[in-house]
Length: 352
Ligand code: CP3
Image 1 (cartoon, protein in one colour):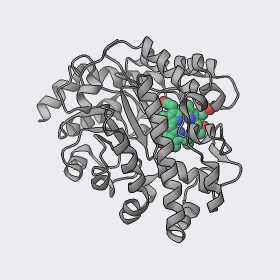
Image 2: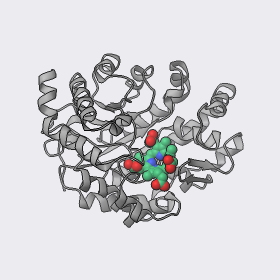
Image 3: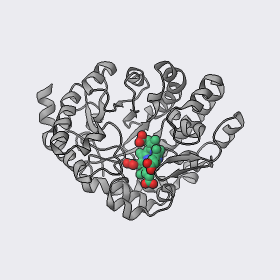
């Protein structure tokens, strides 16, 4: 079905146009807290569930049905492209991506050959096509990839990290090798998101979830060039490009110069403050996910506050400051969606 700025509130907000209602979706809304997801998912690796288009299309659609959100986010993972080219990575439940042999030497670059979407990730293409068939013209499909730095952090650290010591050591000690690694990961992200757009995705989000571990100088020297390469490659595709990271308060003004159309903000920076740092970009965010556990009075107050502050930007897509957590109550998320939809436009107009 054809989606336009007039029919899809999410797309209108991404373009800085006035949406018919304030759009809302949640990062990590697919999977995680939904009982209907756990029933379908089984106990194998999430990469197996992702490789089955009938499962992954259904999981993508479940939150749209339950919550009535304005966008679906593809059920996939940021490690899918590196897995598909045979780097040797798995996703361990409760832990995250784990690599058998971490990236350490120049010869490891050979383990990151180019992605050939039709052969390597035909299941992603099929999933996108299935989802697009099911969505109506008001609901957008967001495709995504991991930004080069965040994906590299898993490849170099060998798994989730708090300190990012190995990846930081690599970028400072061997900047040329780092640049080649980041460049290969940019190419994978470009091929991965390009295939999703070809198959019908309406927007792309680049998850640079762990960029907040970098200083502004490190971000500029080591993360930005490859992120800009991805944004540049997608520029001509005509879909909104969203850039998101956690703990990026000191990076927001740099992120705004990567070419991204929309900047995702975590809960630490109020959206009106973010607007001052970023300038003329629509914003996405930023309800503190922890508050979903604090009861409806707190949730309602905090949701209204986010909407008021979001009105400072030329467009606002309501979201959490980071993702849905596995133990979140789906009813609390539904409560947020309904409140954003019924009161959002009115509150935002009053705040302007
Ligand atoms: O809404 C969605 O969840 C859409 C699909 C999606 C997944 N991963 C599926 C998934 C998306 C958008 C991602 C992105 C992703 N993956 C990011 C960036 C987003 C963010 O949260 O910052 C990152 C850093 C990853 C890597 C990754 N994969 C982590 C850290 C984990 C968590 C491990 C855990 O169990 O807590 C995963 C696993 C994963 N990816 C799950 C899902 C639904 C949960 C585990 C499962 O169901 O097996």
